[in-house]
Length: 468
View 1 (cartoon, one colour):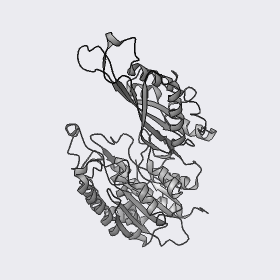
View 2 (cartoon, one colour; view 1 turned 30 degrees about the horizontal axis):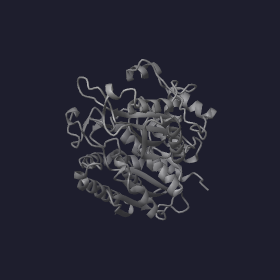
View 3 (cartoon, helix red, strand yellow; view 1 turned 90 degrees about the vertical axis):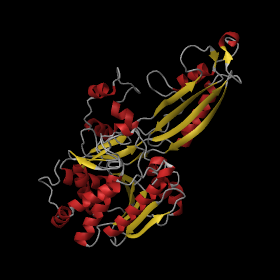
């Protein structure tokens, strides 16, 4: 992977600055990665604040203005802006400084908060998800301001500290700061390239409905010999409910579930067809006898553009060694539905709730605990801001980017759309096999370095886009 392919005429002054500051840049990245900003563990609250203060100081030193470590009721949000590009677009940029826990420690090749560069990889917790992206944006801003004295566009940065712990305070903060966050569109840098480390732009994210289903029979566990045949078994009843939710071929049986699903256009299908997935190698890598899913769609279409419903956990009754002949008093399941464009999480939950009421045996009682939800997001491929990102990626990485849809969710994307009314561009540079959330997380240093240049180039591209 090259930083300056033959068809790319780099900004000579920017390249000279980046070459001169390379060692300083690397040490700054390592210093950021040494901060154990695990947002989901209360013991690391001081580390999260230290990370926020590091980001704030770094942005101020780079030349950003109105830098603010903003209180949320949880870990702080860092805000900064630069608003002197008159008659040019204003872009809201999002990334996060918090990280996942590091267990199991014994599977790490080196301590997770002692960053090490080995074979072109930065190994540390947060290197890819998401401190690398925070640092890339800061370095691109620094280089542009140092070499030009100005930015091509107006920027507002929101660097969050609770993304890895459900962003519980973010929506309220966005509501409270709606006026300050006005922009033409948003850029979220918390995504990765495609398999093989092929440059890619994520255009779609699935939403989520997540709930727990609790089924109760008798007041306590009962002898299966004395009571078997007289009462229903909550585990059997739970299995009956779960089986009714989904057909054997993978299609969801809930009436109305697919009514609002946005179908795939010929352009969408062509974009999926461009993605180089060897399905047999993919199957072998997962260790399953065969792939499975909704009929009529490819594997990538099913994982990126079609909704799903899956049992994530199920338990009840006796699970110890040896026999215990009981009819258990209760059984439980955690169930998630992944949603796609045009589906509404509130509506889907209502449909599932009503269907369970229809199929649940009258011989048991049940309750549903709603555990979380999120809205799906889809950005058209031909959106001018998406095409500007494609041009920037091609110029710096030397190849046309792929357009991908991720099966997971980035809740802030839906929040920007619903609260701030902003469309989003998902521009991330993490390697697809970067071990996010796992031991030995890493960032490709080639992706990191070229990503800085891509971001700088992107702001030049956006400056020439008419968003009126």
